[in-house]
Length: 300
Image (cartoon, rainbow, N blue to C red; front, side, top):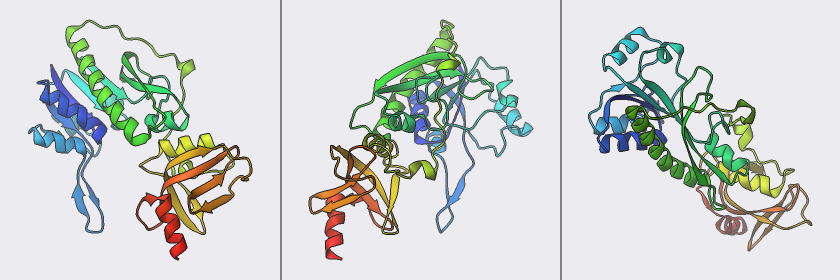
């Protein structure tokens, strides 16, 4: 079974690494073009490209997925399966190619959390479980028939970083099982129930902004869902402060947005209860414990 792997970030690269390590026949990898980053405009490339090069797998980096030359090169590898993880939306020119399967790995239990940021929104929404899904790609995003769903519990101490890595591992298991199912020809595709669909839109700066009129629980979940990156934030004395770790405090005496900064910690009133800041990053400074930040305030 000849596999072409499509993906970009570390979440995808882990599956590519395991596919090759376990002897699956990955004949090419498709990823995004290289980018220039930083002041020195140093060229950087994706985690999937780095992994592919480590195994001497040919790498395709088309500017346009509709480019006839790219499609011609793609077909020259005589693919049987396209495995897609955290990549761009595939156009009809790709979806119409005659291969056995074009399937995707999504970081939620579809149809829950369709969209660009399912891991973040599972935490922001306060879910207690989530998972991964492999499904046959259709023109409408995240709507295809399902091969496999795998669940995991969301722990109270989870944030985006820890949940991302657990789903990355779980996703690799789902990818391997899905390929084996396709190879054996023994599987049943299950349709999604569109009535149960919920959104997981792209994370914007405005979503990252903390609104202290919301409950402490809602804000705490927002912080978990955006930690360590891109980080939930608020403004204090004209400066942006990102919050990475927080706690919920049963306080009714602090009004929404009202701060109490003591030697022992920083508490902010919310729409209900209050939020205790445990780890933060003031604008232009390093990430630090709130105690270190408060010591700096006293020194200044």
